[in-house]
Length: 163
Image (cartoon, rainbow, N blue to C red):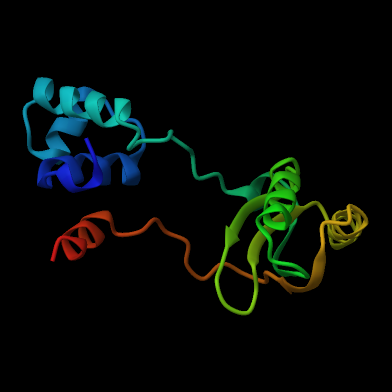
């Protein structure tokens, strides 16, 4: 099953689990407007095909602990595949970096970093620079509040990509 063989029912199933996480067979079937057994069979097929990577809870982190969130943009000095690979392998090892997006344009990467404090963030950045990963420059942006954080509108994206 590739991305072009998904039908409207598959998209409704994916949208439901994206929005609600794991659901009972009955509840998913109700949301998707399909009887439970074929709905569950489709869900199983979508999981097997790799369309569902996992289920996650949206934790109210600010209710659990104090933290500092920083967005960091990074530009590497050199742009060989080995430079990108070395940087990405290193970033994957660090728990403080929760997202790393490779970009085209002025910066090579946009990173999302969570630490207990601003001082702890500086320690993380000092370690990153000490690792000699070929960082040419970086910019930091302290997150002051979240205005919006949602998942993409799956049905809207899927419909538009078919046109």
